[in-house]
Length: 354
Length: 251
Image (cartoon, rainbow over all chains, first blue to last red; front, side, top):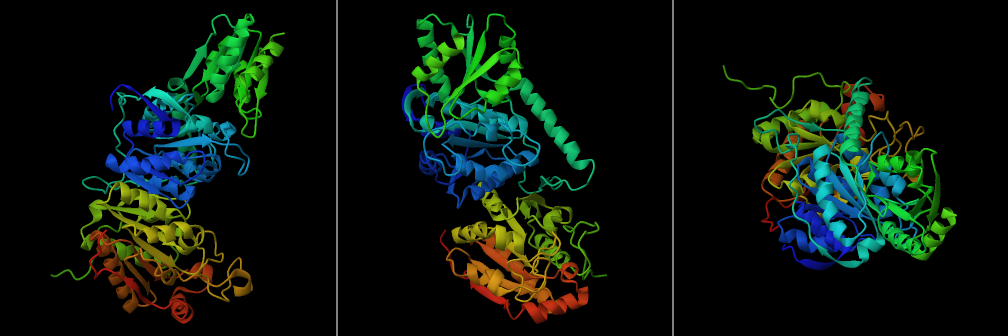
């Protein structure tokens, strides 16, 4: 692909990003609003010598991902909220067995079948592990079609470096909308050798990939502490965030994904009326960029925080933990697949600035 | 001196955790012998299921991965699609394959995935302590059918070979048993054929092995073999249900 600008849908840009990242196997199951992903992959994977397979369920898809990951291949799946719930068992197993994979959640409204409108209500599920057991998944949240493509490069690298499932958390708007973008370059990051894969024990001792550690002690605790160490490394090395008009800000908005763009528009409106507002946009939702928020909350200049989400308040818990009582943390959100309007957010900025 | 019998090198010299009279040991040995005889150890990956045989990787010296309960054939699909030239064996029990993993089983079979499934049917859940399996026979007492399996309450046992042979995908389906020496030899023949089927790229091969669970049946090992013969054979007839290995298959 050349460096020229192209016009693509979010879901398709994400596929192209994955292919540039070297992903050669895709397993998935239809669900709105991410149906463009399996459709695109079914045509594109054969062109690049890869494998597309429509699974019989999300349960099967995530376990096919397990199989291909055992083989050491870059593999991904995608779904939307209800389907991601079904995959949680598999994601827990992947985390336990330290198998790299990329899972994209194009979020829609919930709970239950909910609706097919965009949402951010799977924040808790994504950032708290999601399935059973003691683990985390790194979570990346793009806010544009271009980032949908570019973040796939990073997602696959993080997956391989730490041997972990990585979640790309996006929503129905970002998945469906069309924007111009420049496709990413392949990664230049140095990756560890995959000396754990199962390809037949030829000239080496047999290997096993497992999440079962039955011996009462210290097997599982030791393993979990090993996982914990990896999570600490990720907290140190993989925090990503962006700021906007933060240098003189007195009201700090915190928003991710689509909401960060709405927040930026509201901040411009506030600035037009002389209210110095700014934005911290977490890009890695886990590990959460707590340091920057904590530092800002210690500044006398900062009056308060305003957390904006497409749910009724999930990331706000992480913001409050980072602020740790030093400043008030307000909330504005819409739920059930509704998108906050910039005027609504602007009104809220005015209210909390008073 | 001529060696007429030896332990297959693929079968590790370790103490197995299986109960006396359990059929897993017999089938593990057969698989080990065949991996050696077919010279496929260096390219074989075994999928160990949830159940007593999850520890198969401690006994058979091949690359192996666990899978979540019931998902073995989805894992096998991912592995085989990623590495079509490797040999993939999914070793599963009745709860794993015919209850929680029924969807994965049927769809892998229907796609004609080119791997081999060894299905151990001992009519009960072993690892969890003897609950009703989808293959528990009518009237059989288990932890969850204390007065015997009532077909009007719990349905009738599932015959997997018959069910899968309705599909066009599978290349080879056979049901065998390990209740006596003659049948153990037949079991080996069937599994050899299934593995050959995969090596030749002919598609999905499935061998159901009627097996024992003396501990959870509450019967001693010798009588467990008799129990298979007297109670299982009539409901689960032995034989080949599908064989496309003779026909040229265009994939």
